[in-house]
Length: 185
Image (cartoon, rainbow, N blue to C red; front, side, top):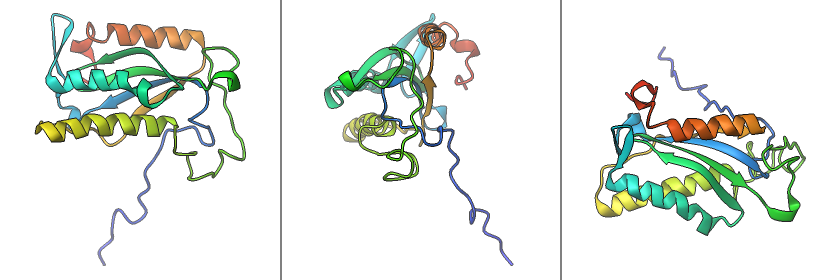
């Protein structure tokens, strides 16, 4: 009898169960290219030299603000095969965070089981990143450029000033540490 190894396969998630990823807060994002291909350029002398698609990724990241007025962009960098950035979701007067840096952990009836198992899909972190990735991929297809994203992305809810400081420093220093970076394959 042939056993289908994918029969009970489920996509695993690192997401915090029940957390509303559209809520106010600071989020650290890493998005990788498929198979960690160096589509975005190369590091020369500790400085990122962008390819055309690397420049487009950089421009489209800045354009997130045009599509999502409740987003603020913080530290950000395009590396040869990945992107790091801090996105700030701030819905203005309805701020639900204790301070400007700490994301509150919100578990409400509206976020538990509403729309899908993760949270509402309009304007949340996944929708924002999906839109960004689609825009860059669409540009590549129209221009006939070889380019592919890894299917998912990594996110971390930034909960305090110390985390935010460390993440900002890591992003700023990413080109300098490229030779030892785990993403440098």
